Image: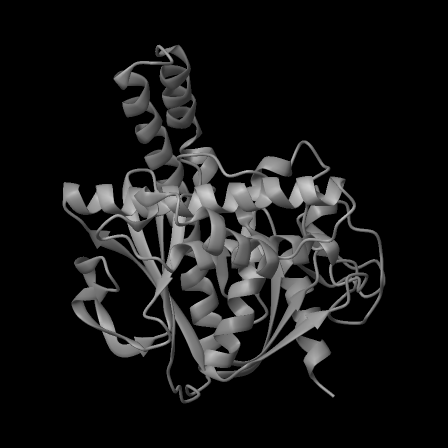
Length: 358
């Protein structure tokens, strides 16, 4: 199967400057393509990425000598137009909004390749096309890839690529498990295992406010403002990494040890309209949880079953099947028909697990 990896680069100051130049060229190309697309559309024409790419390479690129500077990979402009075309494709299919212009320092990234040749990867160093050798903090698998994407978060640069690898299904401890996602407990399994919600955003919120105030008070043209900006970005990155680490541990445990996993199809966008719980709901990252389950299911050889959004897992008694209303404030399910009493999350997880059985 096709796997992807993203890891931090260990760069010198000169290498960071080269990466910034590549990201700047990719950003310039993307913004030029978007502006030209908008102008052509206003004139009644129907532009596409191939037309823009051909015009840019034949007429404009020869004039921009700084793009052809020594040590600059020329493939970044090609991928910039590809990204622009993908953005418009998502917009026309209703999967995303209208493309926006890129801003320096916001999601700086670029993609390079070796003109169709495979790029060897392995160990703690990798030779990038045109750029040369760079080092990483962790050991990379010995394989090859077709293209490499390099991005910046705060003042750190990361490398990401996809590669093919064979995986054998792991030995499962349980045939079926139901997973009830929530705010108080992040995930409750029908087997009785409970994963508490660490609430990383709320835990680090005070420091976030302090760094935000410090950043806002700095002179807009000072070097101290840039330092405060980097500190704030690092804090945001740390909270995001803590959240991802928690989700990766839970989803890996589920896919490694369970043959069938039943999860709810939550209406996350609708849940965020609850302003009292929107912050903690966003911090749970339910969509990311589901995304990780789906690709790890292929990796570890298990099956993911999505329960219907309107299935009353929390309202149904797991003992007799009686359905009754369950307000969020009630944390224990007390059946009005058979008198069965159980934690509401565990009761819902058991009901979900039964959807996998014929």
